[in-house]
Length: 580
Image (tube, rainbow, N blue to C red; front, side):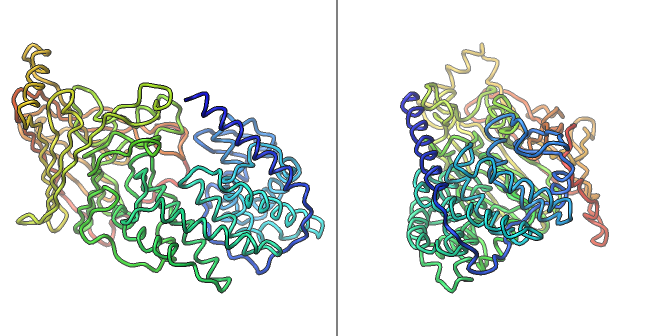
């Protein structure tokens, strides 16, 4: 199977190269039908760093102020892909000064000179679509001060890439890569003279992708919130471009936008960032609000359930829980064993988090980030509730995970209640993990209970065997509560509680009953735009399951607030750090 995949991938790459060379032989003379409107959002700080020769991509920093971008020795294929996708053009445009403009022009025309004839790794449908969007969005920024020869070269390359994309978009992987390819093709077809014939076929294909890949509740099979935001952003860009051209987006595209917007609102924390689950991060600053505003769709899912996540929110507090089975099959390539894990944010400050995706830090960190102990949930005997496949074809897929995940959301006497459970440990230990969380109406208190239950006779026999294997010492469990790096934590009240101080001045107190030992242990916070994992802490409740029912109660309560006039004024460091 692995050999077949390799041969298939090689054939696709070969066909891409052929199509790229054929497109490069064409000599289309074109220009913009209308002046393009920039829609992408970049980072001013990252733009200034790029201008200074600090190339931070895919978790690697190359500091080469005297090198042209295309002379860099890329550390890995992901780094190379980020270079050829040109999303960094957003950052240079955000900086907008003369140095940033010169870098943009030097690197853009440098790419044309070196790779424009169909060479290099950038000729894949998704990277070409991403690149076309950026070139069109920032054309005025890039063309400023250029002579007619340079402009002709720019337009010709745009048209050649459009011709390539028109032939090869269909080999992009289903999901985000194909959405990128088709959005880029529609963008170029609408913006460039002589390319209009590509719009209708690409729009029909995009509508088909919306019908196939976006669920009735605005979900993706990967259950990755950040990936859903990326797809949503592409769809809103497409709808705006069509509207600017005096065309209707079509029912399938409009319906997809209307389905996704409420789901993203459910997955958004109180600070505006997305919940970090299944390989996704918080999302680029400002992108979610901009995309939601552009969609014109109001509201969130009425029952607080979206894409398998449950949301509790009150006052300034939001809790988002992974309340569904993990993805399976190809959709699980980046999925995490995180069922029943949760994150909590108070105002602008994350408090309880998951470790996040370690993809940019190498294979070992990626694998560790996907494991259950890297999430704020219960872990039994140190094992994950889902495992990676054993053979070469499925070694990156999640298998043997929870399949039965019942949940219920209701009103508690003084707030909101979530109840859920999963069977991810039943086959090995006979125990079901059940979790109950209640939030007060003012958002100042969370009461939680984790239970390990042997519910049926076969499960009890399995638990008895697991208990015998420990010589009746009990099956070990740990409940993890990973803290954001900005949270200051300390054991308090003689070891019975943990005090948690946020930068806003808020103080939260974590308590538990006497059935579990409470400790404060090291943890990490994994962010894609950092050079290294950030050191942080985690609260761990440890104990042993000795009976058919084990219950551990815990609570989080706000002990001290801050005046509205001064809360949340501390600013975060805009520059990524390489230390803990």
